Image (tube, rainbow, N blue to C red; front, side, top):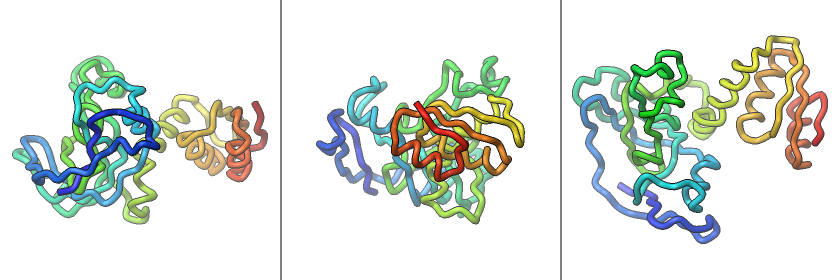
Length: 217
């Protein structure tokens, strides 16, 4: 299979990813294998490639907004079934028993491992994932549209929930990147009045187009 590998971080304009050919991996116990259909590009991937994040090991295959079809199951895995389209996000897996995991804050687990950082990600034709950490995807969303929801969408929705915002209330968004541009669409669907604080004029224009009541610095 073809993979894009990061061996030596350097500026993105210098194309730090290298094409490599590897054997198609076999899923181990508790894992499944995906035939990758799409994988989004997150700013975290850019940070990895440019050396802004200390990598646990190299080489590594980045990419953690993966949409794929299950094509092989490891031992003890029954679901999702072969042929199912699923998504793989940033959190590859956690311990499942610490306080953070038990309270639904798996991203804060001290034993968390992350896709495209600790384990190879989705810039490849096939990828492995823990069966208990893949996400069901609705059939009406195209592959390339579903991929960003696996990072920016998750973060935006979680932030919106933690804000406590309710329909027809006021909501403030500080910064207007990938997560916020999804959160505002949900908030506007709830008929919330949204105020966006961001420095970039292009981001302000985007926020206005998506229904922001006010934009400023």
